[in-house]
Length: 526
Image (tube, rainbow, N blue to C red; front, side):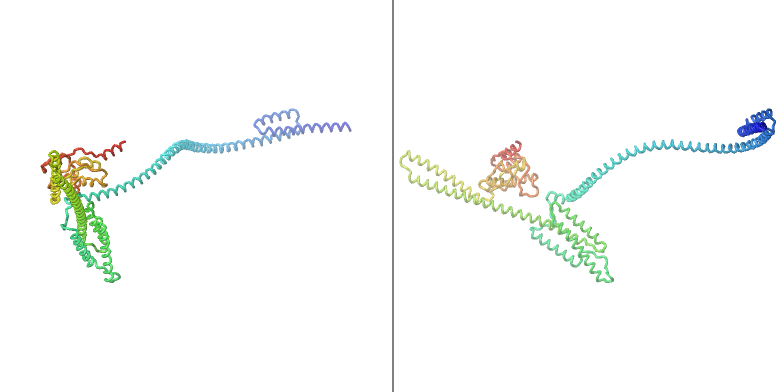
């Protein structure tokens, strides 16, 4: 029984070993089936198994292996087809990928080119930025310079405006000196040729009144304007006439005010310019009222021009009369001083004559009888008689001067400190002492005293003075006012004219002392 159990156990162990061997073989088989080498290995295993034992299990295994080999073959065949299909598909995909790669390469190349271009652009950009910064600095500098130039331009424009104004003033002044007109040439030298020839200012004023009355009449009856259109306002001719009259009155008022302003300021200097301003106002005012179809007439303008010149000549005549009256008053004062000096001199001579005659009578009454003393007294009597005779001559000379109003002194004086070299005053005085008149001339009106070069007594002093003035007429310092007796000549020229018109010896002082002037120069230099 136990032996049978042992056999059974032995058999089970053998089966167990065989099953384990089979299972191991199958495991190896499935492992090996995963590669192509499994065929050879499997064949080797089958061969070994058949060689060692030929039991049913081994046969089953072989059959299984055979089946598996068939399956493997089938699988391998199918796998090859699949692999071929996959290979083809992969090849197609690979071709597509290669195409895409080529495209991507081109894109990448383009991108690289763009990157290179971008790098170039960046470089160019940096250059542009640098250039921009430089230009910006230059621009800021130019802008600052422009602002400075604008300021300079503003200042320059102000100067230009001032220059323009000055040019206008210069033009206005030039207009006053019309060089082609003889009358204006004379006017510029103060030698205006009058348009009217009235004897006194009263006659000028009467004529002015007549002209102004004529102008009032022209304003009153509208004969001084042209009215070219009859207006109507709101269909009313009467209202239109009222409007026209209002405009006419306004035009007259404007023009008259402008003319009055010009006429009241007329002088030698602006006479011609004043006429031009009146004519310009005439044109401007007519243009201003042109829209109302009214205008001032030429007759009214001519009347205003006449008024201008009449008023100017009235002022000139008034000034002449004023100067004549001043000269007359000066002459009267001079005559009064001369008469006073003569009376004083006559009283002095009379007093001395009485004194000398009284002494002479006393000496004659008390003459001693002794020869020695008598001769002394006779000498004193003779001396007194000589003095009395001299006094009589002086008295006769004074009486002659009193009777002869043409007798007097022609004086020749200069004032270097006030007027300069070779400017001499040639005047006349009937004073018994001409130095009194010279000293009066050197009063507070001039900074320095006059120096006397000659005093010439003449029985006909006005004739000698007139001869000197005529000889140097073109050498007058003041060519307008002949009462200003200053001449730009030399002392030798004066001596020459005096010798031709005066037959007596004259003493001259050639050198002008001008003490105060020379001392002032010395102090100024120190």
